[in-house]
Amino acid sequence: MPFYYIIGVMACLTLSFLGVFQVTLDGTIVARFGTDKTRALLAYLALESERAHPRPALAGMLWPDLADDAARHSLRQTLLRLRGALGQAASAQFLLATPETLAFNRAGDYALDVDDFTARVHACQRHTHSALNECAACSARLRRAVELYRGELLADLFIGESAPFEEWVLVRRELAHRQMLESLDALTAYHTARGEYARARDYAARQIELEPWREEGHRALMHAFALEGQRGAALAQYDICRKILAREFNAAPSEETTQLHQKIRAGAVASAHPAAPFDAADNVDALAALAQFHIAQGDLARAHATQVQVVAQRQESGDRHALALAHQHLGTILCRQENFALALAHFRAALALREQIGDQPGIAASLEAQAQVLGRQGDRRAARADFCRALKIAERLGDPMVCARVLTHLGALDQRDQKIAAARACFQRALEIYTRIGNRAAMIDLQNRLDARRDPN
Ligand SMILES: [Zn+2]
Image (cartoon, rainbow, N blue to C red):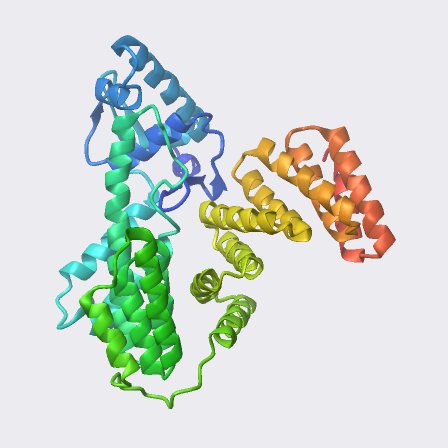
């Protein structure tokens, strides 16, 4: 076999499971798994790749309610779907199938984010340093590890009728979640020790986002604020912590947290900077502005961490309008970080608040954002319903920009569903609006879409 031929059939597979399930083959997203069980089978084989799995065990795990024959038949069907999704070459390369067993081929050319994440965490545990919070090599490893963690393991994979599979996911998910929190903890300590308080606060805020009641995170944030000279913000953070613990567990903060609070209140935490007067309202507005600044700078990690604090502080204030906006902005940042599952949760939170207070333009904006995520996740029916609702509201409000934008989204959905005439009609309507309001860039974009429809090449 000539060498170039071998190169030609080698496929590079990327499996991203920390967050929503995502698989790419030579850089292209693999979308057509057909069923959640197909995705589950791939995830299980890849994450448990150190051994071959007897087919009856896999069938029993994924179809616990079926009789043995029916379960094995379903497994064969699912394996066919998986092969169909990956294609012939990649299936041959990555799936090792015998009549008795199935396994993932670890010798193939693939990258699995969970393995990468775990390897970095373990390397830090094995590294011989005098102290983790002083080790630059480990902090670099952990920084990359926490970037890999887009969200909880297999966040969008839920197979209710398969309890054994769900139990397996839960155990793996909890392990990764713990490792993530410990990594964030170490990074927070590392940057605090170096006097890099803003970065320390970013990592502490992410801990709290993952676990709002995590006192280590609140203490780290209080400590960093205090060292920075932001005594008021440090005390406000204690208040946030206290309220979350009361709400979630009807409990008070631990002795350690209370003592830190008393020390900060007494001015006994050494500050590297002169204390600035603190006003809660000014602080949250400044934080919101800071988040926007980080977005403009393209620093999404810091924008994210800052906006998480904005949401937390808006929650305290009880201003539903401002809280909805904070959720909406956080959702937008998460989208840019490609953490779509979490983004959706924030858009939904914004929508619910806006529905409570009857904020019509806000409802349209949240529906539009939510629908974009749903469309991306392949739930085009739900996306369409939300876009249609947003369009109705925008029409009622007489907002041409929103109407045109939503019509463009709807046209794109129709296009993907091969509804060519409907897509054309949407694009045509959007083009008319853009022409009326003189948005030239959008007009050119729409004209291109319409021309592309006319010309199949
Ligand atoms: Zn180290």
